[in-house]
Length: 191
Image (cartoon, rainbow, N blue to C red; front, side, top):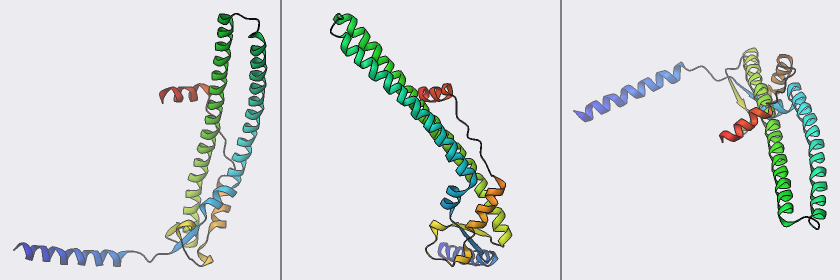
């Protein structure tokens, strides 16, 4: 009895599987080079310029901190000759505290840059998905694959330029949003 039930279930499952496969639409595939699109979109180029501008500002700020610390270290080395051990230890402790403050500030700035870039890049990616869907419909495809997933394909499947063009029209720019120092510090404390 169990064997008969198992056999009947297997036949029913096989029949259902064949019916489902027959009901599926014929694949009409389009291929996109997502990395090329994300790298070359006008929005991404604007994001990169904004990030590089902020990075240059941070580099200038870092140079100022480096000069400040170098000068204080030299002063401390000179003062060691004239100060008592206790006074020197206090000055050294103050110097190390300042070094730690600057390191924390630089860490916050680094995280600000990374999060701003990641957030903007995610916004571009979401717009890329919408643009890909539009182009998919326009060309009559029912499936879009990343070029990286395809071993071989005719170039006629590639809709990268169409998606890039659509993306550039739909999202020409992205506002880069930098989190406040307080928000970043709060995140760091929670870790």
